[in-house]
Amino acid sequence: MKRFQALLIGLMIIFTCACAPAEVYADNEEENEKIQNSTEAAVEVSAPSAILMETSTGTVIFEKDADTARPPASVTKVMTMLLIFDAIEEGQIHLEDQVSVSEYAASMGGSQVFLEPGEVQTVDTMLKCIAVASANDACAAMAEYICGNEEEFVNRMNERAAGLGMENTHFVNCNGLDAEGHVISARDIALMSRELITKYPQVHDYSMIWMENITHTTKKGSSEFGLTNTNKLVRQYEYTTGLKTGSTGDAKFCISATAEKNGIELIAVVMGAENSKDRFADAVRMLNYGFGKCQLYTEESSDGLEPASVENGVKDTVEVRRAEPFSYLDTNGANINGIERTVKISKKIHAPLKEGDTVGNIIYTLDNSEIGRTAVVAAENIKEASFLDYLQDAAGQWML
Image (cartoon, rainbow, N blue to C red):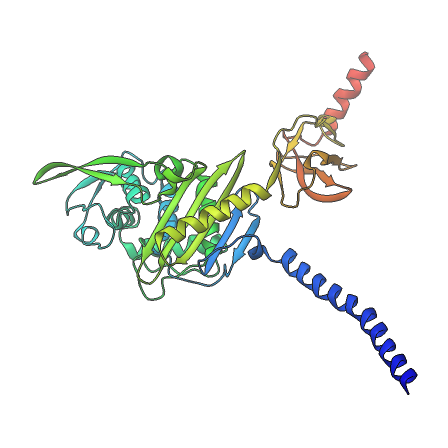
């Protein structure tokens, strides 16, 4: 009996020892996978919604509930400034234009620069008021100046948002005051911020102003008014380049923070933070995380591209160039110095050719895997050869 009991105990010990390591390994493997697949394990963000995006490629490096539509407060003004710069680019308005303030614009509450009805300011000054002091009255005045009324301007804001693929956005006003149905997601804020800073980098000249005075000139006379930037990162974070803060009762504390370090530009969006300090702290955590994780490979030059052979053209070759710069963002610690490129030109290129027609590709690989490509295009027009062209060419060959 004792021998049987001893044998039974021995078998149980062997069974336990054999099984235990397998259970521990499975638990560790599952935990490791969770850590590897979750950027939230690497970045601690207290706000309910946040996203970190690399600007040149649009790569999302970190996100937390980034598609929930929330009140954006004055971060709305990123889109307002985008439309102002659009209007300047199109020649509809100019920085030196004089903008008259209406009764409606002057009546805006919240953050403002206390514009008075009938007061006149330049577009340039209005942009400073919006970017630096988050002036709701200046936003309304610009909306009316560009579109005649705020409603039409807001329609244009929503159209612009749709064109950028902002799927969780609906604007109701141009300044971000709390209103039923005025919402946007963190991802959409990143998208419109990226559009603004890449298409109109001069916005940084406005959003990086720390303090500046403007002059109110009204029937009461002239007076100085001081603007102070609502984005404290301008002074507190050395890599800051902008962009826009916002806070209301419904939205709580939000920011779209842009920063650049060693040629890498990032956009950190925070929505719904409990207080201003948390908003800035969350943005800095994400930016530091991104700068520590990102390596950017870029190539813009067309150097090394040889002319391509053309059939049936007035010329036998065509000058070529890359269609656009190439960028690759690595976030895994790869050796980007090992990136190789291969130029592949179409074997048969027939005239006629127009400048910009695709004639091949530049293919980029890393560790024998393709990481991207950019088109090679004709850099000139090549007409199709006529019978007379062939005759003249033959005559020229005969003369030789």
